[in-house]
Image (cartoon, rainbow, N blue to C red; front, side, top):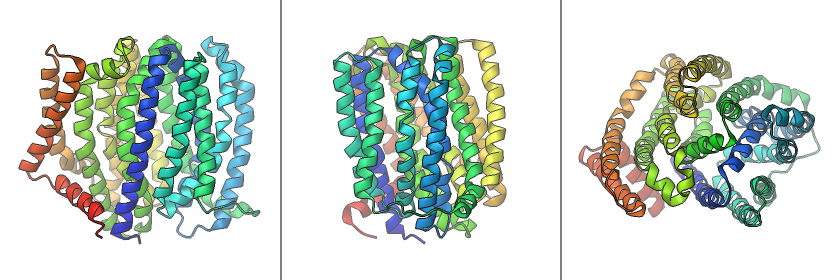
Length: 482
């Protein structure tokens, strides 16, 4: 069982890793957005649909199985490493030979070479996934922090240099290749684990008995998520997909950094306590309330200040992505409830339930997507589907935990409802003042401060427990107390 100090320290370093990488990625994306065209980002978004799905086979399932297994040893890690590399080779060959079909489907011949080059990241991803599982299992998130920053900074510089030289979409390709390659290099020198010359089909088979369900679940989830990009890219222009993907980038980056930090630490902690449902429920409630307390006001503020933010950071040519930002903020605001339920189910070892939930959610979400496309026939209509589906998915994810942990969806919503109401009021106030004619910089700075003071002030006045908890954790980290 991990101590409170270990969990809090790991959470701190995971959060620092996410924040550090997010800051570098954020600045890099802003610079590249000013140097490149929306069409360039649209083309990369199309290719990443296939690369992301391919990575599901290589990285998902196995890595989670290694974290979840109580007594995983080096034979498990080495066996998974070689199995992942073999799988990466098979999938790369498939992508290599089907790349022309992808290019013909979207009527963009340049996609053939882009797919073949970006697919090389599969091999680096195979190694990274095993090393990250080792880090998560041993709560060594400080090493992950240095690896991520060490890879991102030079790859960002290379990408920007290529954009300045007029490489266009290839600047984005080169940046991603450098990033994943450098991650491997830095991880090799910061993590002690090394693959041994040993392999066990029995170990792989045993891990697959748990992991294959998660792998299929991840494939369904990623396939469904990327279905949006496929539809926007096919039905509309690459520029529309560029606005769509940039609009999703801001809220997704914020939520993913906060929520992933919590979930990455929560998963191994829950796995250790998998025989204690009461302890899992307590940790799960803490994860939901703490992350929601932070994420809900940020999403409300970003949605309210989307226009001045885009004008300052990306420039006027990117203004069409403002409504996408606002829609995705509404969708991702409820992500903590969504993911915490899934982490609890995984920690209990119920990958069978996990898979059934994914199938049900994707069937429901696809029906909603088809309906919205029929009704609206626009990229905005496609984006709006996300809000409806994440609310529906939250209810579906929470249903098993009502029986397993006695912690159902309505109780979870009741736990976060004070934050939700306060965040909505804050967002409405900020949006009202944003309609006044001020310089975008003045709007963004002054109204961000106004929103933060209002939210934290009212939370302090009403004695929100989550604020007290975060304050206590921060003081413990500063003072080095247990």
